[in-house]
Image 1 (tube, rainbow, N blue to C red):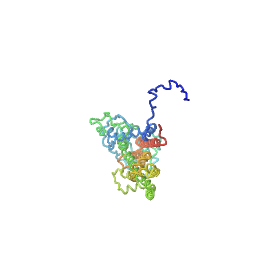
Image 2 (image 1 turned 90 degrees about the horizontal axis):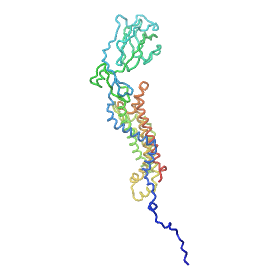
Image 3 (image 1 turned 30 degrees about the horizontal axis):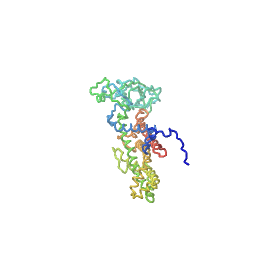
Image 4 (image 1 turned 180 degrees about the vertical axis):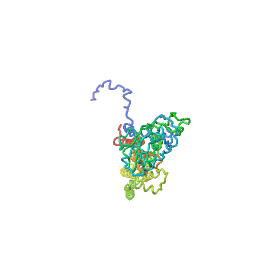
Length: 468
């Protein structure tokens, strides 16, 4: 007996709609590098560091076209000037020739010994002419029993006693020499001058005088800014947004030129050393055996070399002379000594990958050893190599800055960030901008590369790869 037919509801046989037949939209699959790029962009610190490095690269490449001042041009009237923009200055007339005043009929040295403690303070201590930043000329009356005088200068504050007179700016021999001209590193502001009589030792008594120096520029220097400048006029000076150094050179122009040197060494040396390390590590990891032992023992020998001693030996061997920049020698030393860590890293990666199935399949299909190494093994170490390079670049930049700072790197007058720090540390207490700006660029560059390296390490880690 046939089975009875079971009635089916009408809706079970209804035609499917177009929406039901359409496949559900799925997330498209991402390649390894696409996924790494997405995760790198999600890392805010690494992404911000990438933009900072792009800005530094633009600063280095396009800077000389945007800021056209010559980094070697000296303006001695604007030495160690702080950052300024649209600055104006009074044009000063040329000073008259200075002639030292001698008191006629007065002995140069006393006829009998005199106790310095009994020497009086010089009287009538005054200016010969109005003081300016071009020079301060002083005169006084001779002191009986004095064999000479000392002139002191202190900025801003009036000395309370003989222990607070400031720095000695002049030592005059002879009791009849009663004038002095101070032209040492004068800037606009208030100075207190003091003169002390001496006869072997100094007298505790002194005469003081206050000098108010207005900002100005010598006529000769003003006419370099404006050919029609005249004494008494005010002229607009060349802007120095980051100030000038101890020789009156524009600091921004020197930082741009120094960036080219520092980043050239910091980028080229790691890439050359990385290429050498990849070659040595790849050959050692692929061949193994005696080749591995020979290459790795040589790597250990290079790692044991003291860097500073090796740097000095290379400089001696290359015969560096006065006027040489020192850049080729530094590149040679950095490449010769910094490839070892990359070689050990690549060797470890190749040792893990050479037994992989795709490598064995390529070997069975007749691939040559060099083909296996260049097409199958080394490309798969690229992620680790990139991360290592991002950490090697700031290390090379810092090494160049350190060597230039201690005088073993880039040689003046060629500027680099390290040599600029070396110049700026000598005047840090009086002109901190000369040290702060190059040190800030070094710190910012090293920090940006380190943060980018951390981001790349996370983005290129296959264990953190996003899944659809």
